Image (cartoon, rainbow, N blue to C red; front, side):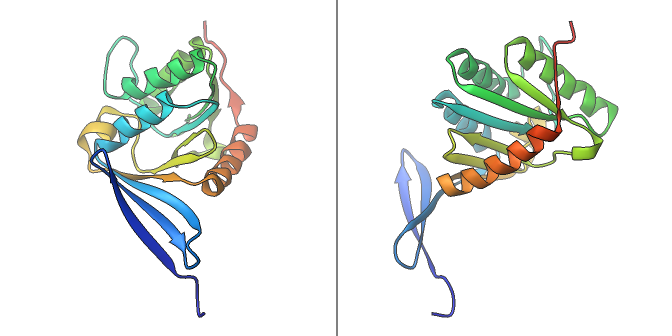
Length: 189
């Protein structure tokens, strides 16, 4: 055979279109779900709420302001609740860019640290632009959604959720490599 052939099977589950990708032998490679626009925040929220062991999350830009509720809080609250029920939650937050981005990202980092979540900051040496959520070493969401009101609710963003232990493992290695090079965020108070 000149190359690897893939087949895609489409399933509809609860109104959500899932696509199972297999190789030419029929072996599962991944199950993928398109997350267009507002689908991201609801799907990420549900996945974190259903997590059992570990959640790894990278944030390039947030719009977190203490005491001001936004769509991003749905996911932020899910991270806090996951940690409270014993799930290991590690969040890598970008501390590079404009003063406004850094200020809001620091507020988010402080909020998470105050709730006992492990947070590390990525500065100029390790700009973290990838928006990645890894749940229980099985599901990865990757795409363009920032943790902002605009990114989750108004912009024309696109991401994809992939159920694959192999792909999740690749992204966990990437996350761990960055995690080890970034600084721990401690409580400011």
